[in-house]
Length: 299
Image (tube, rainbow, N blue to C red):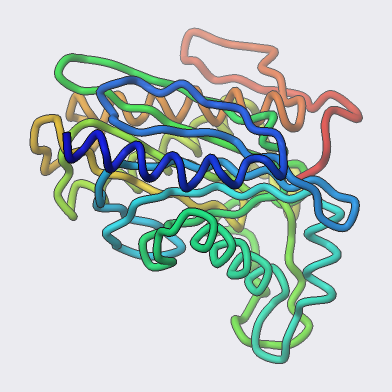
């Protein structure tokens, strides 16, 4: 009863805010004990779309933005590229790029609307359109894994270890590139801190494999295979109802599920957002791809 009331209270607080814009519910497996929806709003003539994943109690989350927290909400906020360009210019301060200032305001708004403290919200940001969200679930009893993925790689793909990094935090004149792969990874398994950290490696390997299978090349070095973009982020959320897991590498069954869910999710999201299309496959599963001219919004 206590949990039921907690879920009801959290959802009422969140749903009250939806009257200001349209929303779309995202179906998640019951084993995850989580709710998700996309809220659509408008700012300065541009769309904002926010994927909100809520939980009935605190969940241990590892975020590449917010670190290790006890969280109640995981967010992937999407803003039109034109809006991101606008806020990056207008909100920039001497010490911070405008995008960070903007995203901090989004988190504050979500906290106020939901009644959940900011420190219990893990947040990602992107210019990829949330209509191109990929939701992929993989099962192998007793494990359930779901990856919610947005991806854009038309203008910001790079090969880590080869391409130059020019950004120095705090420096003026920083350019904020658009193009990001964001992953929110959910599971029913109770992950240790080490297992959540290892899951970041597993999902990154899966993302890079998807870039290779789609033949995504670096935006900075000609004819070089990209490994991702320079702004990729992820949130891993531990479950509370499944078995305890200490290892999420590729040799484990749950690691396999993570890898397959993220690989499929990144492939789907890049195809929907940028039009990358797998056109050739050999027995070794090496593939190359082309981007359909003019497909979707660049991000």
